[in-house]
Length: 206
View 1 (cartoon, rainbow, N blue to C red):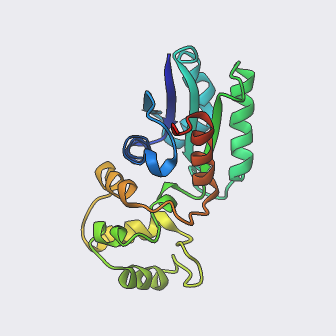
View 2 (tube, helix red, strand yellow):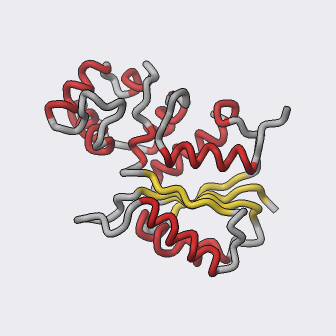
């Protein structure tokens, strides 16, 4: 039996999670584990509505399960908060026979991109820019309130930066960002839940 299966919605999230598990174990505070990250073909909506059925056939192949998706996976007004979405998926998992001690639903609010906006000087380097230019762009497009440590519209700001440079968003870019992002003083609830769960399940060897 393997240690961990992570179900994600897209290639960017897969690259981010794989990089964190493989290259940022010390920062996460976990030991080396045998894991696999799988994508759902229906992206965030598939993870949200079908995680319990997708993982059913893998139930006896892994000890622990992480289910990760974006809160804003639909168009229009949010029908459910991140907390309510997580609760709904957790209930479906339990009804499918999963022990609540062996799985965790992580809903990133609003999207994965919020994890990559940190204080590390490596981030603007990877984005081929600088913090002053990025913040100015965010302010001009009303994507980043100057009083906040992170942009309120993280995905749109990343897309705006990349559009200026005529660069596409890619899994390789998220891999670079995941290698660089600082865990220090990170207050994002989903990231804290992600880290705390992994530390509980797979604590670093002393």
